[in-house]
Amino acid sequence: MGCDGGTIPKRHELVKGPRKVEKVDKNAELVAQWYYCTLSQEKLNRPIVACELGRLYNKDAIIEFLLDKSSEKAIVEAASHIRSIKNVIELNLTDNPAWTGDKGNTKGDKYDDIQSARFICPIVGLEMNGRHRFCFLRNCGCVFSERALKEIKTEACHKCSVPFEDGDVIVLNGTKEDVEVLKKRMEDRRLKSKLGKKSKKPKAAETIVKSSTVEESPGPSTSSAGQDSANINSGEKRNIAFCKGTAEESTLSSSEKESKNASGPLKRSAANKEEKSEAYKSIFTSHSSAKRSKEQSSNWITHTAYYF
Image (tube, rainbow, N blue to C red; front, side, top):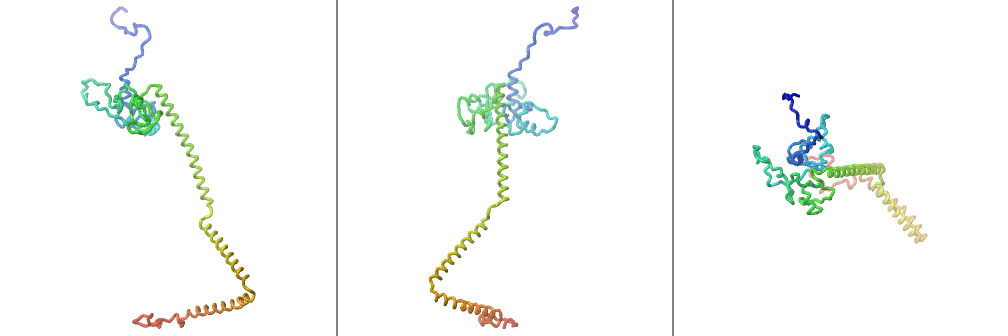
């Protein structure tokens, strides 16, 4: 109060009015987005992956994030939409031949050129430093500048010739509007994949049920079918033979039938008796078939009763 030098008023105390909000440095923001991992905040090193919203990550950081199942795991907004390694795409980047990296300023006494980037567009040659819009293809992971995709319109990738559509082009580190569009595409794509999986499950169940019913009620086997056909053929042959016999008998006269009936059974019975007697005699050693000739008999050193 008496200007004794005890207190010195500050500027915001003397100047009245609303305080100005501090603006974020654009250069610092670009460096953070294009040179550092969104999840671990470490420098981007290969392999580098990108999510479906166009953010850049180190693949090692994504794997560690997915493997961490502890309850103390911090929920990061930048990776909350990443549920598996399939939700990220490994990028196929083109190196910048003019980039020296950290080797040119090891002591820290030189000026770091922010415009110089590690990667470039393989078609136009623009550096991927955030000054120009870059995109990547979801099918193959190749990275190009947006200018190259607009100037050279094609339905296949300029680098690996993989076909793609407009929905497969994802903008890297895009604006809020770009992120909203990409988020909607991501949700639609995941919904379609879920519906596709659900539609496949009932089909698989139907095929299993059909196979089980076929196994439980098998049709007629080939062997039974073959037997039925054989029986049918044999029955037809018998009918044909019977018809032939009846026709022949009808052509014969009555006297011939009587002589055939009279002589036939006697001859058959006599022939059967002779066959039976010969078969019965062949059992004994005295039969002619049991005896051996001198040519058939071998010279034995010792003679037994079975030799004679």
